[in-house]
Image: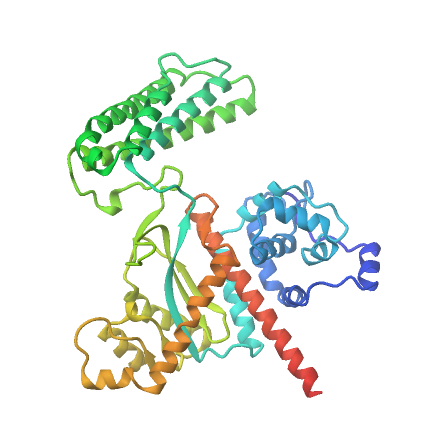
Length: 473
């Protein structure tokens, strides 16, 4: 990232604004909100300047305002990087919102690099500042809280042992080819291309019926595992043979070093894939979920089983969400593995108390969060209505009467609203499937979707307040 100093608005820009070029009202409210809260911009500035010797010199780069506003716009509209760049370049009002005005808009990869400079911790801190600003403006009082968990998918294909083995063979072979090209060779001596053999066996397993797999898949899997091991061993031998080889210049040296690092990375993952395939298919073992690799491209992926009829198994990460009565996501967290929901109740109450100064009057969730200890903790903390349905077992007469009461039923109706919020995050803010690579960028993807949601809600609440004020006047 190069120079990040703020730039001046030209006279042409001011003239277009004077002639009536106006933003969409919601985007205008978001823009005004960001203008009045510079502490959020300073958070972003710290990430952009991280690692730079002198952030005020060098080529002109994206400013903190441009990075934050473009990230919000991208998630509000659920656009790709290319579409984001094209829409900003084609429309003056979006140039105005993203703080480009009449200046040139960089290519899409510049936005990608700018967003990748941000850390999930920074965006989470910005989200906390947004929620606090909403409290200071009187838009949210924190009297009600509803919580739920959902699954955000990683961008992988459905994992099976044969497709994972095939992924290892084709990726390692491709990288060895890139290493040979960087060294100026046609091929690396001793490495044999086995992609055709691996593909043929992978497809043979894919086409088998359930009965054929019981009777015939073992031998085919043994061949495929042997091919994969051969490719991994040959790749490591190729790395040893070319350890002293050098590139023609410094750029090729860097490319060679990076390619060698990638080959080592995928060979290590290949060892794990071979091990789990041999144990599961050839030895008939039940491999624990924590030891499995579900993708060599996104190895951080977890398997999530939630008992859903349409999606019994999902691949990605479980995400905890807490929403206020006005639609603000006040808490979110990307979880490791598939932890039980009930462990989040006490923690979410503590976080709510830190943000709002007190516990909510109503705490509502589904039955997955129920435990006698959680209900007792909520009552001891001062929550007036603990709306968590009992999970399993025989209900006592007092419990059955309470769950039939008007206040409990109203709390459950309020709880249902978070399902709609999750749907908005999935369909409208692009949180259903993370297209970014790596665990850190996964968390950044979720954080950006939550930030866009909160800013849209604040903009809508400010517009509603302004409308009421005009009617009263």
